[in-house]
Image 1 (cartoon, rainbow, N blue to C red):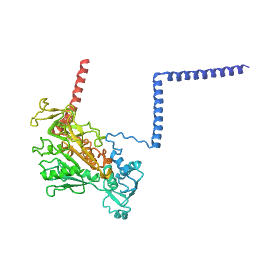
Image 2: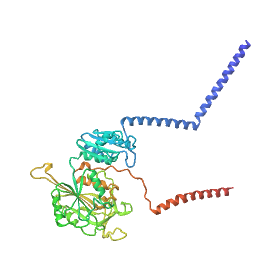
Image 3: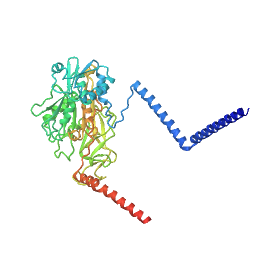
Image 4: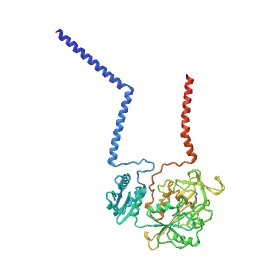
Length: 489
């Protein structure tokens, strides 16, 4: 009996110890979870798990629906507006054959780019061929270098030698063209040279026009005063000399008969001789003032005489165009006595803070209310005249005169054409004049070179600042801290 009581006491004691231990553990756990740090830690863990869950679900949805976002500044991974327009014109299969070695890292870039094209047009078909493994196919296409891309549509064929959106889009554009329109640049009056090699030439303009599917050539009316039958657009780019009366007569007749012309004339600060274009263009309702525009608010780099235009008139040419600049530009505006049959519309104007400087010989210019003209100043206009035959009103029988006049020719030279939207403004103007409105767009940009050009003085400042200046600052701070601690002791 006593043994049973002892066993019972031992059992009860053991149970009590267990209960006490469990109670202590429970209180400990409650205390731990009741601590502020634990609460914050738990909340953080729950938030992290919730965020991971959201990311997993979002990633699943994005992958399933093929949703993509391009957050790069230059939209490196997005197709341009022009490429999308060109692909929308494709109405039959385009076979793209790419000759890349399997180990070539550029192959993946080309494939990714063409996948973007396929997202817009189902007519784009691709095939990769390794020239080393299949030399017969390489010989068939007369391939003499790796990375060559052949575009075929029907019996047409184009070749690209670089895996870039500019090259690919240009090749497809040429395939979709039913005819090759010809752009002529007037020659013989010291105009901008489309075959020049310096920064003041128009060689890049010529290349850009050819990528748009045009044929480009020079035209001299001095040797043969007549307009070629295959001329689509006449460009007069910054003439330094007067045109002969016979040349003017030929051009006037061409415009009045429904011609298309882009006229770029420079101000007095750049062309001392009066070329006579002010009176020449007045008959179409265009006024020209060859004094230079100064804009102290919006200008390119450090030159107030190179105003930046970021406010455009509503027109197809300037739609979606962000900004462009004109280094040395005069006023081009609507004449007060413009003929009723011509519609003259301003395309671009400078800021309200600008003015038309009458005294171009001054070293430091400032607005003179008595002499200068306050802005905004119109620097480009478009002129249209549409007439219909009395006999028929069909589209084929319409004569549609189109004329664009800009108070500067330097904005499109090789040194400036790739800056801001200068190239887009020039090419959009040509496309509009050539009645290729569906090609008016913002074009793909080559990847930016993120480099900084430093002068000799700037280089010295950076060198001495990093090699001597920064270490000296660290040493000085150390000395100050040491002195402060000694004083405390």
